[in-house]
Length: 141
Image (cartoon, rainbow, N blue to C red):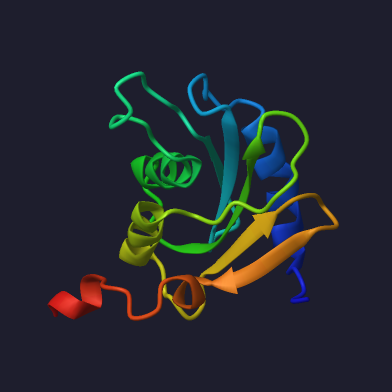
């Protein structure tokens, strides 16, 4: 198991707390995310569903959009906790759209994605591991 960095430990608690704010009346799948900036700030997000489905926003993008709206552009890690309502029984990996948003702002070899079941149960990946051969701003240079 890969080891959490000291500043990432707070992300686990923050994403689990954010999951409790999920608005998921259709899927009943609650997701929370906590995004760590390189400056040490944490931004949280939860999934927000919509009856029309397409306007639904994932927890990861909610956290990113909140941080970017606050002027942040450099990120170190994100923790994601998602499972059907109730106890967390599985890991929830970011969807493809969320991975693409991460690719816009993050170095795929350095940015860490922490999938969380509990403070003791987690898996750590880099963005590059979850989005190999990703397309980002560097492809347009």
